Image: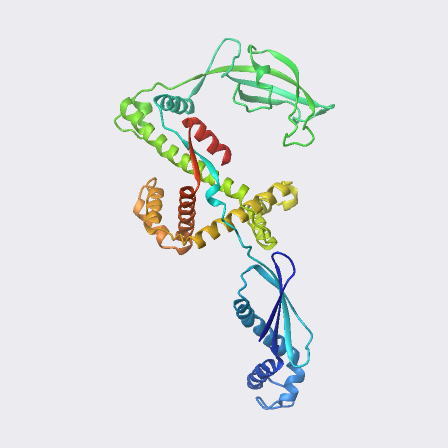
Length: 436
């Protein structure tokens, strides 16, 4: 077997593989002997058809099968011989028989070489935070807000109230609310409606009617209304104010604190907040590291990997479109943004892979076990959950990959210039929600 390689671009390679046609003929003859025992040919007894007849009837098919097998078996050997690492599947084309040679051309992209020389020069900020008594008080207030009830009042509406209204909207002479929407509940200040709508609901009494105009946001989800002025007519049906539950034993026990004691409840809430904060700080540090890598390490990206990543990103959208009886195009997805996201994921995967390989970072089995045990804590029977992960290599592999990535990030942090910055609990959690 002879192999030649042509570099057609930074990542593209054109590999020509040449195999003596005698090898093809030898394998074809062997296949014809097998065929002679298996096929029936009119005019001949089973197994007695001459080779010349078999070649005439099946020659082209057999040659295609043999050359296909040879391509499959020789391709890997040729790559190994030339020390090539292809990214994605090759495009293979057989060439016309040239003398006594069978030849084919394989065109493919290779993985890029990645320079990590400047890694130690990168700088990142590491957020530090703690859970304060004020943070716990705010969390308790949020928990009470989640269990609030509404009580009718005989006064004008104000921020925080829930008003029930009938309303209709018209833009450029067209009613876009399908007539009048009746008994719609709006919590003033909760941002349920377009910006400015809530303000128009303040200081109104039951039975009040009002007409006002608002401009829809430029990025509104309905293109027909984006940036357009609309006129609304409303009528107030009822006004209710929120009533928060008492911070009593019944409320406390509803969150799993059996003693019903406030001191135990505060301690339990703080422990959960500290667990969430630790995860939030970890995620934030990881984001900082990945952003620094992406912005400072240049990686030429194979188109084949980008296309694979785009397909992976688009898969959930395709399934959603199918469930709705739509085409993928009907979802009006931001294609450019999705492509940029795919490129970022491919680049970071290549960079992290290079770091893992160069510095021989291995999966820590104890950390994998610890992560699985931690995930299992929230279930009624943790041991069954742990066994469920270890019973399936695919499930276990997903956790192992996550742990390996975390280990790699930890190693990278140890190599960078890190500056600590102190932030609040709310800042960490709000940023995590935005990134999610």
